[in-house]
Amino acid sequence: MKKIFTILILAVIGCQFANAKSVNDNTDKIKALEEKCYVLQNKQVKADNNLRKLIENQHVAEREIQTLVKKNDAQRLAIDSLQDKCKSLEEAQSTDRENINGKIDATDNNVRTNQDQLQSHTLYGVIVVIVVLVIIVGVACWLTKRIKSGTSTIGDVRRAQEALQAAQTKMQEESVKLDNQLLAIVQKQLDASSASKITGEPDHSLVVKLADEIARIETNLSKMDKSVRGYKQLVQAKDRMINNVRANGYEIISLLGQEYNDGMQFQTRFVPDESLPEGKRIITGMIKMQVNYNGKMIQPAEIVVSQNI
Image (cartoon, rainbow, N blue to C red):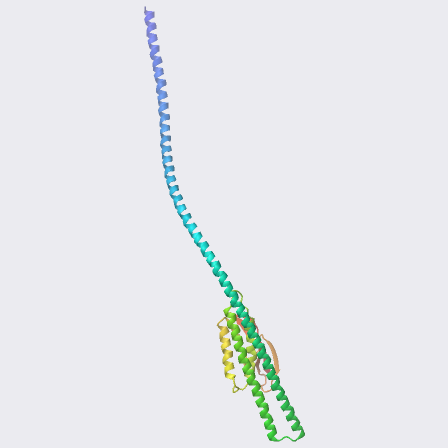
């Protein structure tokens, strides 16, 4: 009986032990499940947060897309407007090009006309000078023959001198008249050149040509009586031309009447002049004027120096 009771007790204890072990196993599983559930909950929270952020980013992206679409539409309108303006500018440019070409052609025609006038005036001047020289030579030859033959009188000599003086004055007046006309033609060419001026390196040839003519005119004026008809008008026209080109950056430098020194680096031609004091050297002629453009020399001077050494 004791054995049976003992066995029963042992069986009960075994059952309790088994139940306890089972309970312990279930507790461990529950804890493991709770931990997994906790981890899953954390992941769920993170996923919800990420989803919320994604939704917010999506809303922001949608708003940005809407903004970009509006900007794109505005830019499309701006591009269309620019294209219309480009077309208008092309049409205006084409019209301006035609107008400019027309003005250039008109200017070329004016320049050619002025050049033809200049050539005709130059030819006329040469003819006048030749005629006057022939008269002077003829009078001089006649006077020489009369003096050699001994038949001339003081009155004849005086009349011959007066004729020579009149011929010389007439030649000077014609020279002054032609120079005035020449400067007027050059002024027209300068005006036409300025009207059709195109951006870029300017053409200095016309101003250099003008400077050479002014060199000749100033040299002639220095040897001419101021009472010659047209003298003052020619001086004024010359000075006016120099001032006009100065306004465009040119400087025409005259050295006439200055004393020459060895430091002057110019192309120089020396001529003897015993009327000067001994050792004196004076610039009495300008073959070419020195021309500067914006402070830079574009043509050096070429001078004639009278000296008594």
